[in-house]
Amino acid sequence: MKKLLCIILGVLVNLTLTAQDQFTSIVEYHYIINNERGVSFSMPYRLYFTKDIAMYEKTGDAKLIKDSRPKTEMRGGVRITTKIRVLQSNVQPYYYTNLITNDLIFRETVSSKLYTIKDSIETIPWKLHSEYKNISKYKCQKATALFRGRKYTAWFTTEIPVSHGPWKLRGLPGLIMKAYDHTRKYEFEITKVNLNADSKVIQEKTSVPTSKKIQEMKVYIDAIKNEQKNTLARARATLPRGARLEEECEECPKTQQRNIEIFN
Image (cartoon, rainbow, N blue to C red):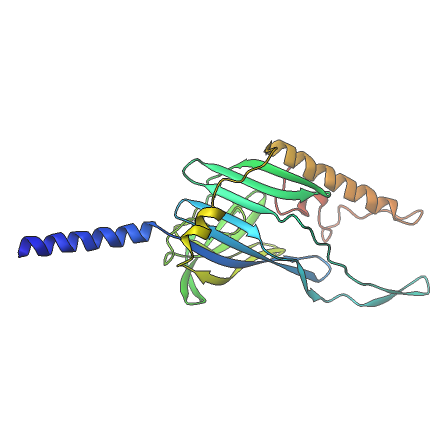
């Protein structure tokens, strides 16, 4: 009888450990961009993941959530009305990570051109802090790190013990529930958690992305830098005669800092 009881307990423990390893989960985030002039946009993203593989992809259109600018202003005696039009794309960005193969593949549009890029999974030097708060029903701990030119604060929960998170943020001993850079221009916040998702959906979504042309990270970095130069050139071209663009003032955002990743 004792031997039978030990066998049953052993099977139950093994099943519990196996269940903990087999995550088939979906969480939803809002990715928020707060621009310098008081305009904010929110985009819905969804993270599909197992223990070792994750796919983070945009699932809907961007929405204007804040506009604190004056709607009208006088320029040279003429009343100007400002309206914002949110441009949409039929091709949505995604970020695929595989901890087994050490792959990070993402897709983004730069200057209306679509790129599929092979990046590297970096070890983010997170520093854990003795600060805690609840996000939804989960107890979360604070962590900070410098990553790709920006200082990030992240709140993660060990109640969901996977190292995934939104975008390229990862590497903590629990799922990242909320994150933002030190300027608060870029924010990620979880809105929904489903830890018992359909395994077939997860298997499909976490398969390796297929693309005819996967390019190296240098191609993406060059595209970002060229876009920044072109943006600056367009801004200069619209200035009235005799005016100059303030680029070195303390309040002015540097051109190379207008992308979430800062490349020198």
